[in-house]
Image 1 (tube, rainbow, N blue to C red):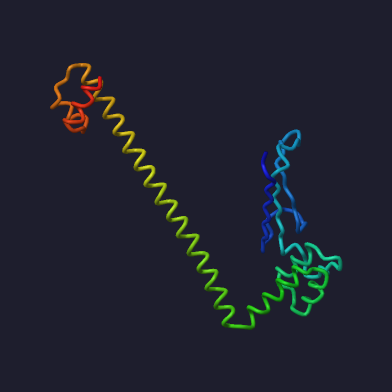
Image 2: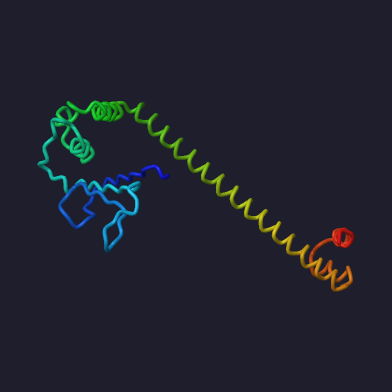
Length: 180
């Protein structure tokens, strides 16, 4: 059973041909509209469609977060954060990082470290994958050479010719001859 996968795309441009700032998509069959699965959900939040005059919602919610992300005037931050403890924390963190050059430098250093670490891991995975592929190819070539050698031995071909054709050593061919 799949776990639900929700994708949230916050866009600073208009993407979809409607006036809604929040659109939600699910996987459905084109003609009948029957849902394939309810485990995938795509949200598109388009900041320009929110409107410059959108009012903060007193009960909190998505609009407040989007106004914050859109860059609403700092004078409105208190209203936004009033009923959103997590949004208040984000605002406090942003203000802290904005005021203190050393804190901002430390934050940027941490972000760089995390990015570098992710790049190293990605590079190591790619290198390991390449090595694994090379080993697999070498094993496949060896197996092919052994199969060819066995066929040539059945046909009575001279060992010196098989060495040249297969790339196997004379000792390997003699060992295969003894096994079969």
